[in-house]
Amino acid sequence: MNNEQFNDRNVSENGYYLVDIQDYPTTGWDKFTRVVRRTLRGELFVGLWVVLREMIRFDIHTVKYPEEKMPIGPRYRAVHEMKRLWESDAERCIGCGLCEKICISNCIRMDTKIDANSRKEVTEYSINLGRCIFCGYCAEVCPELAITHGGEYENASDQREHFILYEDMLTPLDKMKAGTQLEFEGFGAITPHEDERVKKTPLAY
Amino acid sequence: METAYLIETVVKIVAVLLIFSALAGFGTYFERKVLAFMQRRLGPMNVGPYGLLQIAADGIKLFTKEDIVPTGVVSRIFKIAPVITAATAFMAAAAIPFLPSFTMFGYTVNPIVSDINIGILYILGVMGIGLYGPLLGGMASANKYSLISAARGAAVFISYEVITGLSILAPIMMVGSLSLVDFNNYQAGGIGDWIIWSQPVAFVLFWIAAFAETGRTPFHLVANDHEIIDGFGTEYSGMRWGLFFIGEYANMFFISFIIPLLFLGGFGDGTFLGALAFLGKVAFFFFFFLWTRAAWPDVRPDQLMWLCWKVLMPIAVINVVITGFVMMF
Ligand code: SF4
Ligand code: SF4
Image 1: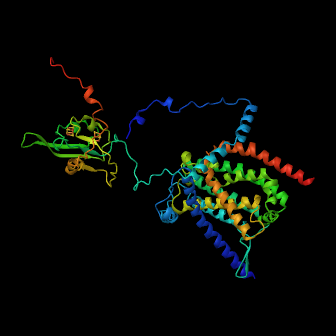
Image 2 (image 1 turned 180 degrees about the vertical axis):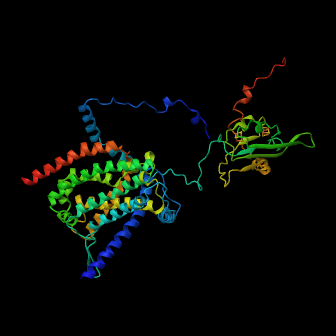
Image 3 (image 1 turned 60 degrees about the vertical axis):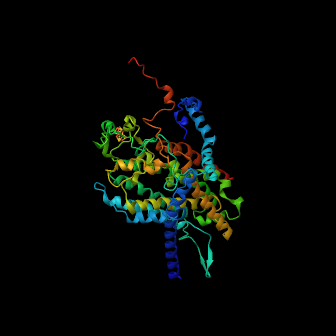
């Protein structure tokens, strides 16, 4: 999907124009002529014609939701996902806890331990989607691009608490093996041409 | 003879009640569909084929919902108000000839409950009483939006009734009768005889007033959702609200019958073709009610009163005077 049309804020070139508003009539005669003019101009029939034309054209825009779905933008912030590393298929999350710390609605809880290779390993990780406001801070703060938002928005539930666990968010291994893991383009993602913009740190530091 | 007449009348009354209650349901379906198509939507689609069973679903919902009478309302008036709306709507139907008379099993049927000689006066009067439904319901509801709606109802009422009466006066002078059957027979000679050609101003005025009478969109200010929630209907639930609803739609249908009868030749000479043409005209006027709802904005109460008293009433009076002079000379 193309983001350009969303980023274009240059309204003056998009066919916007100022509406020509006439002064309010002050004298009785002016008011009278305005009424007569408006009555005889037949604008009501323009309105009637427009809706009838649309009915005859039958150009229906309804999306029959459960059967059809609108495409959503790549930056859409829906239910979180946990990504894997492309090189090793290992989990990207290093258990640093930054996402838990920054979450403004306190809905991330995690627990870690040091595993056999002295690597920090996530043992528990859950997000209470009932409290999450989908602000995207966790995705932005994550140093490893591990937690991101995904495109799954159908998370209706019959209770306020609706937890999603680490295993549910993690990209499945078979999907990883097939090379179909999608990178998130929104909050916290690497911007395009990142390599060219990186400045090397001088050795003197 | 006497018993036969009684049985016939009762059968007619039951038929009118059943047919128009059902039509009110279909009316909502058509309204949703037409509005949807005009707004590039599909309307109800999921209940039954093309959403046709939506009517049944709505009916079941209305009938089985809890009937709530809130504390603080004037309960007796609160309870009687919806009945007034629905009952008067159907009472007005008594003097409307729905179709030309036809013969069935060797028995001549006049599809009019009672051809009283003051038909139009009766219909307008009874429909006028119908406005007491919203008025009383709104005032008894102990809800400020309902109260505003009742006040608006009164304002609308005193405005449009004048126009209805005055605009219809000129055709009545020409026909010389108040019976709708006489009106129909007066125009039975074909399209050239239609009263619309001799009374176009009266036709337009009556049509405008009909919108105020039924409370349809340009004059929907009694129950404007975006201003005063549902107006007089805010506190109502279940079948009491349903009665208001049926009354409104039945009114729309009956007005759609009356306008062609008065101005567009009705069912003409009473042949099958004439009856078909009549139903076609009725369908057009009903469709027009839905059409304007998709196309036109609502006016404010003061604008409606301004329109009725300062614009339409003078025109109607002048129309009556001119008709009088033309008939005199
Ligand atoms: S999106 Fe915001 S609220 Fe939701 S888990 Fe992330 S930081 Fe917390
Ligand atoms: S998801 Fe990201 S921010 Fe959260 S603990 Fe893992 S690496 Fe740290």
